[in-house]
Image (cartoon, rainbow, N blue to C red; front, side):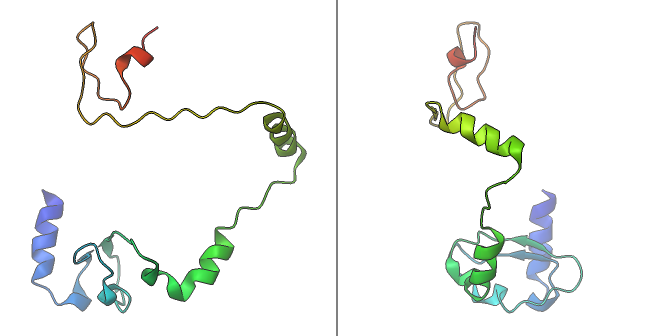
Length: 117
């Protein structure tokens, strides 16, 4: 409820003075690139598009580059992982809660049977 009131109040302020910014729709919002924040600003933005990051793409790629560790502990763990068969299990999201035999409501993504022993 508090966020709703902040949004409504912000709509009355000029864009440059808003402490709470909401992206207009899900498409690229050019106005966010030119916004110069003053103080603390809360951004409610999807950031779905490379247009937001084009001017800093090289810096982001460099900063987010994964460098393999060179210490002996991590190298030993990496060797152990490489020497075995790795398995990945993915459970699909269950959007509706289910009730188990014991009548407990399941609020997880996987059926309760998986967690019961």
